[in-house]
Length: 150
Image (cartoon, rainbow, N blue to C red):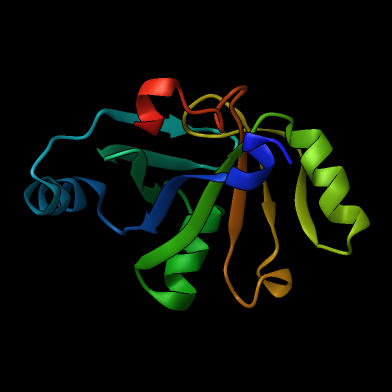
């Protein structure tokens, strides 16, 4: 078994759906004691995002921009709160193919671009006990340097 197989997939970020991004940025800046690293948007998903870093994991605040945004619809149904967990993978399409073969319901084909500019796809909550899971392709993302291991 390789180091990568023992390590599994690394948590990249936790996404939180918010109804007012500016107010949420103020709140999380105080909670986390730091400013967002990046404020960006994704036209593929009709969202604006603020990205904070907490250790090796990012916190992604998502605000829908329009009635068709999945984040807007999520908030209408559930209210603001935890939206999804995201894990980084080296080969998104290969990961999706493996999961699909195992009977996991996939949302997307890995062609959408997420808020950080990388290909993404999701696993339907029906396949995960109610939790939306995102996979993001970031080559070599699951490999720790020697410094990270010490």
